[in-house]
Image (cartoon, rainbow, N blue to C red; front, side, top):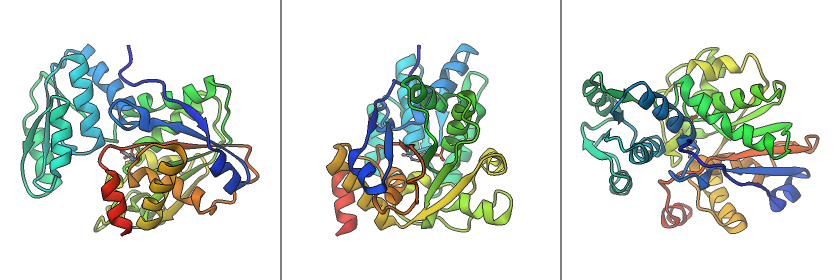
Length: 303
Ligand SMILES: *Cc1c(COP(=O)(O)O)cnc(C)c1O
């Protein structure tokens, strides 16, 4: 059994035309929890369930928390998600709709996270949103599916928050013999903790996180994401919030799915034709998805 589904792999003719090559989109927005996160989190939850865990705990009010809630509902396991007061009504409602118990605690995420950790008993599993080898193994399955469909990407574009998606895609590429495929790692200006790590030569905490791409909001990337930059060509790309949101709206017009700015970030350099990728033959972009955006929130951002 797998809690994630096989998602469509679709060629984008508009993006191909714009960039002078073939662009393949892995449509993770079609996952039942709304984002790729269910791949890794579903994999980890099944693992913990097999080891005897009978409650799942998360401190993510975003797509990671939603994936834990979905996994719990499917495995018939109670889920507690501890979120800070700043978490939107919409996010809380989505979590409750999945059947999770939402506990609101503290003004900042760190306080909510501490409370979540304090609840842990031997029966519980805590699900980290990005820094966990089980997650990376689960995320890697998206690359298995691409290769199984006969597409061998020679470049990959993806968004980076804490670096779990990056680590998972790297693992997927490696286990399919695609060790030398370069990755374009995209962040928004206000959430550029991967870029900061590359500049500092190690993962560092960025002082503040700003902007609309909230799912990219990790103050510091995981060590694994940084270490990979020594083993594979990973090109950091930074886009503005406006470019990310514009890309969400263009993608909605072109491919009829609503995605978050965190995902629009990966599409933005393609819509802007900024990557010089004509020399690659099959470029894969991970359409990582996201449930927190609404059409109205995107439109009111662009004004
Ligand atoms: C979590 C998430 C990301 C970033 O993933 P990391 O593993 O934290 O790098 C990007 N986009 C969406 C929609 C997400 O939910």
